[in-house]
Image 1 (cartoon, rainbow, N blue to C red):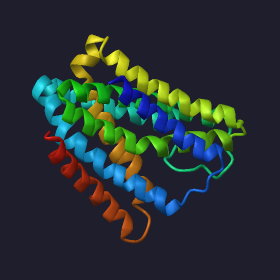
Image 2 (image 1 turned 180 degrees about the vertical axis):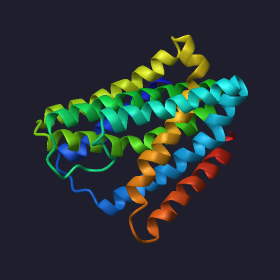
Image 3 (image 1 turned 90 degrees about the horizontal axis):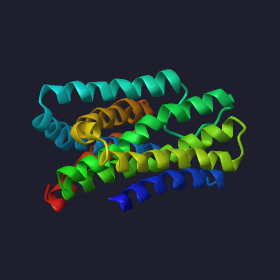
Image 4 (image 1 turned 135 degrees about the vertical axis):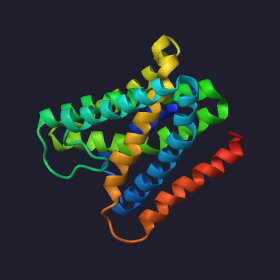
Length: 234
């Protein structure tokens, strides 16, 4: 399972490296990636994470899922109010960049909890959750590193910011196996956070764009989830 954690953390750094290396990103391609990831993540949360959490924890699991949803809202849109998935093109203050990083750390920690909790249910579910996490890790690393660069930080600090997100994901995987509360309620927490990232972070990033390619990418992400679930035997 640690290999999955390393791969997820590496995807954060991959997104950051693209920005730090001044690679040119197609906005259209990035929006399509976000739309696809949103469809896949929402499907995983609704079909796998939430039902399994409710089966294990009943109404308490629903409350914990809601708490996870609210916690990410508070950290990302109160503490890190400026953060969005996508490359930052305007100058921001140092305080804004640090606040965005702090706001993202809870989310990325729960990404790790989600992966560990998914594998706690079974290898097939764990693999599906891992893919859902991996799909938004590159845009996430791209976003936080570009935000740090826009605040005037150097390339090293931009990479370190993405690395911190990766470490938080790794910590989430490791600590889920060590802390009883995370073992017992990790699925519910992951369901709430995954729904938030898919519905409240990713969907607003692309829904105002015109054209058919983004709705098709969103539906394609959902359809791919069902194909992957069938192949995995979940």
